[in-house]
Length: 419
Ligand SMILES: Cc1ncc(COP(=O)(O)O)c(C=O)c1O
Image (cartoon, rainbow, N blue to C red; front, side, top):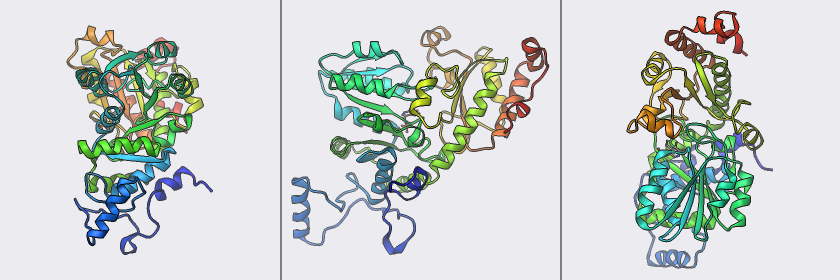
């Protein structure tokens, strides 16, 4: 019987009996693996030549047993046949795309995605003769119209960063399969707890494991998951590029994933409460959270996700400096550019990701100076709500704003949203 995700995060992919009967999977701190004699080596080489399943390792750039346990666990969690672990999320994205694209091919990608991914496509792949087209998130007619005879890949994040847009995976797959194009979904913001794109027919799922999978803001890793055949090609390229995860990191990741379901459920709940609180606050212009009915993709998200995630983006009714002052008044979240760990992190998007652009240039691509991204950790929701309330109070005349809106004076988030 298929086990539930909360059981799988603990047990999937790991041998029941491990070396020396240890309970935990050991860190195999080795760069190379030895052979008993020449025949042993001949058997291995022959098996590899014929593509037979091989139980052992040869050299650290091609595989490691600790990393293999993580790969097996993540493949099961996302419902794929195989997974390949990398030294970072970007290594997973870039190696997967390099394995699928060559000179003369074409990739379509959606906007509102991680800036480095877009830079890799427009500034790096373009140097090697790969064409690209960016299409607006949620415009399926534009997506289909962008497909050319040489289109090989459609890539999108879902949910996206920073606006948490959610792609309709059923529509995406229908369009891609009609034209014989492979699909890659960066599901970092969702994790397999909230969304499993392979079940919709997506070809590859990518995660920055640095975020929720690792979960403790203490490692960098990435993973791609899909069919054994296609992930095998990515793995072969990883063996050439060498962007592997080291055994210590693989162990930390394995350990982090064991609490993934608990953490993500907490982060889903807290983020939802924060989104509702911010949505009724008069100093907040707009809240972007797929769990809110006001979000453009709420219906799609509710249908294809089992949770809306731990990131809330919102726009304050102030300028660049005012936004920074609000952030500085927060006492619990750290200011920093990541998400998904146990500590809450907050960033002013215009500053962290788009500081090189002017306010006008940022506005042209939809990034306002008042945009804040809050990645909630596992702290108590009540404490985070109280912290946001005090920072908003100090930054804005909240009482006057509330009176202007509903004449009732200050409304405590603790009263409104305590559960
Ligand atoms: C959605 C998404 N994909 C990929 C990456 C890159 O991951 P890493 O920082 O692990 O290289 C990030 C990093 O922020 C991300 O947010």
